[in-house]
Length: 336
Ligand SMILES: Cc1cc2nc3c(=O)[nH]c(=O)nc-3n(C[C@H](O)[C@H](O)[C@H](O)COP(=O)(O)O)c2cc1C
Image (cartoon, rainbow, N blue to C red; front, top):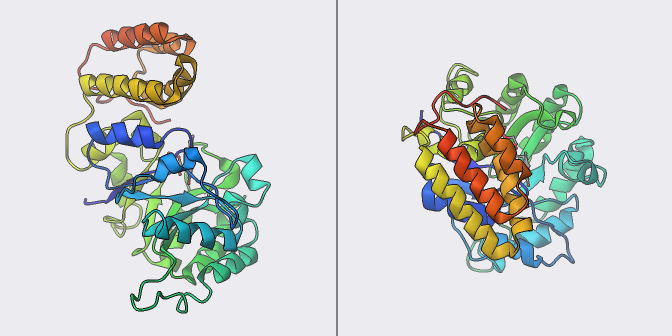
């Protein structure tokens, strides 16, 4: 098994601060994505968005959320020309009501013809777009991250056929439909449809990989055909930040490194967001996932959720780590 591993974009969770501290502590992740950024012909990246992409990071791929093809081109070109990024990802998966109602994210899967028109505009005149003399297109490489449909996994075939028409650099498939949000259970057969239509060279798998053993499930998906395709880890990696390292044959998560990691994260957020209250809000979002590593310490986790100032929070975290007697977490983690 030799998968390249990506950290999934997670709005509010995999921020630049999180990714920075993560990389101080954990190996195994080859590429990172920003949570979705706005795009548009009049869009200027806001301060919060700029923090995600500046300074340039060769392991980072900015992700855009927009249904406006011209706007996508404009912002993608800006990410390349002004900020140095050679690849930009398009979000075709966000299930949130406010996003979908504007026809963005997973909302773009509602009408395959419209999606086709979107890409026709994005990739129009690509050849004419070659920069004089350099041979480099003005647009960066375009990849997408998509669900398999809006309401029915059977939509996968038509959507894959649309995507197959365009020179996408990579297609990350999260085999759930929009209506399923993140409910347990994915649709392997719809992923296979994408593999059949698009080919496995460009394909990336994302969804419900929570433990190192889950890779075997993926590898068994189609007679080992997907053995080496890149995988993207979301909630499982936030719950167990050593997951990618372990999947690559390294050490499973150790209690001490998790403790220092969470402490560093607190410090880093506290410095940037400036108040205990807002820092707590961020940390509780991360504990929502990390807490899965402590199935026996429900009472201590509740104290973390209840904490409403810095000292109470840090005392609760100390109590949690002392209550967890083992130095490791093997076997403790239950799928979300
Ligand atoms: C809180 C949260 C925020 C997310 N934000 C984004 C996002 O900004 N862009 C995106 O493409 N997907 C986003 N996702 C989806 C994840 O990238 C990923 O596709 C999903 O969690 C399934 O993978 P997993 O089973 O490994 O968690 C988000 C998911 C969650 C739970």
